[in-house]
Length: 353
Image 1 (cartoon, rainbow, N blue to C red):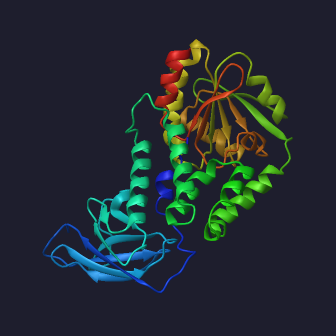
Image 2: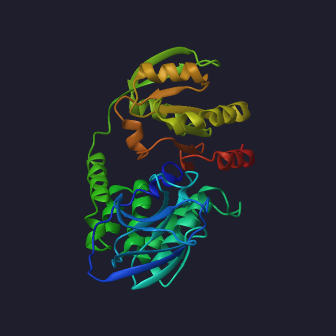
Image 3: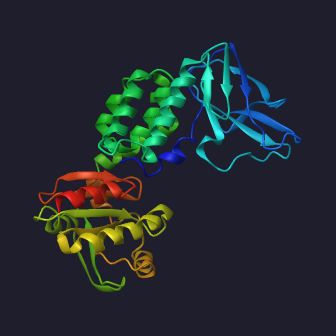
């Protein structure tokens, strides 16, 4: 369920919190692309390099301050300062300087001597495998991912591993639960700028109005707008949800690249299951009606839309990032949700429609 935004979030770490004047020495190995050229290992904290050294014979040594509350990254650059790699998430290695000495293998991302570095990379790799679908198909990946992040946070609520887990978990938490979990962690987690801002946002959303207007748009098979009607948001929702059929809600926006990438998959589900009783509704998020209509026409979206003009429907489902999909049963209960990988939705519909 957390597949929208997770890959990029791995690299957005803020280095704030505990401090120490003890030094951590990192002995590393790496395979460089061209042994005839010079390469440098760079240790990064809060997007700023804190140490740099020349890679010699595939070896490097970096030093930083010991601090179990700070997550740092090691990356490889060439002599011109360009990042070395193919843009993969593992072109950097995450470390936590919780010990006097540690060893790391940049290529395999294995480490020794640092329990928190081992825990951090184990957590990140397991999440990555879940995002890529490398899990027993009988296992509910969304539930497993949620459980993994919660357990990791509670096990590490006073170190950098817990901070990383909470940053990823927090997007799908309601305000009250997020506040409760933060109160179980160290002060540096509660005071993290990103988490504090998100908590404030969630609190404001929880107090927002629950009534407003939407524009319901009837769409033809070629993405042509057949008719539109402005109406009460709750009325529009309740007329179409929980009325005896499965409904897939596609929260999207014309400005959202990943949303556009997923729309052909949603159209395919509509072609597969519309005649079997599935209804698909698009719900635009923070979008302008004219831009939404242009995107509908351009991509030949063939399912009806709710232009959520005041964010009422989005707030009802606690949608913060898009794309976000919800599959609701004939009674209106959410049975599946996620940000991409609609294969899981298709498998469920194949069994239940």
